[in-house]
Image (cartoon, rainbow over all chains, first blue to last red; front, top):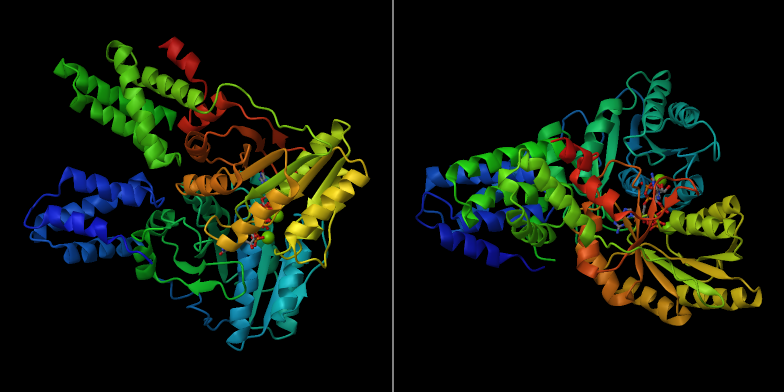
Length: 299
Length: 305
Ligand SMILES: Nc1nc2c(ncn2[C@@H]2O[C@H](COP(=O)(O)OP(=O)(O)OP(=O)(O)O)[C@@H](O)[C@H]2O)c(=O)[nH]1
Ligand SMILES: Nc1nc2c(ncn2[C@@H]2O[C@H](COP(=O)(O)OP(=O)(O)OP(=O)(O)O)[C@@H](O)[C@H]2O)c(=O)[nH]1
Ligand SMILES: [Mg+2]
Ligand SMILES: [Mg+2]
């Protein structure tokens, strides 16, 4: 991988021994961040922080500057919340740990569930999947294939059935069969569709009849190539389902997923996983330092 | 956003007036505000820069500075410019050939399969004999998905579930279509990343094998800055004829449309506005321009001012 060292050299040279950052350098930094989908507001926030540090610390060389810049960005990325799963370990809860997976259309919900099922199973857990996307063509078949691929049972009522009752049944069967973790797949929905968003709230309510604390985790899946709309997605899904974990997919492409910095900063939702391909093993636990590094890597 | 942008511009321009003389420097703030608004709408930052550079000259020529509501006038100038850039003349899909062949390509999850179903349904309603072809041999249940959509649309679907060679399936499908005297063949392909050399080679080979009359690049309207890289890379390999912009029923600003249009200079031929088969429409450059700027009816606003 080619690190964008050029950028840091230029940045560093322009700043050594100064108490103010060159306009040109700041413009360049703005370009790097903005072209990674960081967004104007968050970019301005980062640049302000850098300017303050430079004014205070002076005499920056390229290495120091590199470090400070990464620190400032990483600071905006929220740490993992202690009450949700760390990596592929799950916190102890009463009965199975229930994860409801939500997001707009085509972001990678079903695929991420397949990958997570494999990881949880590998770490010795009993996993059950719930096929609550009963709307999109062949969605149930798709999840069932992931179930076969990973050797994990799938609870389904078929297409065009009530998603809430599938979720209820998955939770019930999970309890009865002593599962450690239940992953519920839902249909993709755009956050501005009120009915569909209310349906999510209903899925949640119905599950809670069986396990009052469920879902323990609501995971919002974001497509890494999405631009500023991801921020609105996060806000709207947060409103109806109290999202407490993020997964960012498709980071194996050239998109950087920078919008997540602002989301994590403003909404305090930690990023837990990243998707880096279509295969079962193409999932990684999020590492904020690696993520920040990747922003400054040339494609 | 329109309100906030025009207010910001009002403010920026008013502070210019006091200085009496219009120089490069005092216009800079105004231009920067516009550029940021575009970037926030997911217009690629380089595209945003070239657009605002152009607008700067235009605006200065138009005495924006003495207008009562300079911000609004400025936004209108921007909207007009964006409309222009997005292509004034409408370009229709090319359905010549016996049969006409439409190749559908794009990134993962952009909406290719759904669009294939929608286009099949649209053409079928125009009494054309259509064949849908399932060339996605990778995604779990991709063939089933297309079959369900084909059934809903009342369009036959050609698939070879055991065949692991997309090029072969595509070629066989064309032969079958000729035999069956189909008028249009729509080929759905697997999602792929532009940097996935093996997959890009596959789609280039599919194209070569079936010689489509129309190759369409399907892109999610929520895409951010990377849209230009992807569109460029697909265009280099496929020299596509048009773009399909999906998921416009959401509330994304859709700046990617402008970026793609200016960078690859290919027309946007269809838009997707929902998950159902009839949620397909033709593209309106002026509406897209206003959407990117987040404005309602700017013209009347300006006239009232
Ligand atoms: N390259 C890449 N592709 C991915 C990744 N995650 C998912 N995909 C692909 O993205 C496409 C959509 O994935 P799905 O899992 O079906 O997405 P979804 O959110 O369940 O979609 P809907 O249920 O239709 O809303 C598929 O082609 C996946 O193979 C990833 O991390 N990288
Ligand atoms: N709201 C909305 N959803 C859409 C639109 N077009 C497609 N979708 C949804 O987006 C998701 C992905 O669509 P697909 O047609 O499976 O996308 P694809 O490009 O074939 O995906 P892969 O084959 O996995 O690469 C599905 O949930 C579709 O229902 C649209 O215009 N509006
Ligand atoms: Mg799904
Ligand atoms: Mg598809």
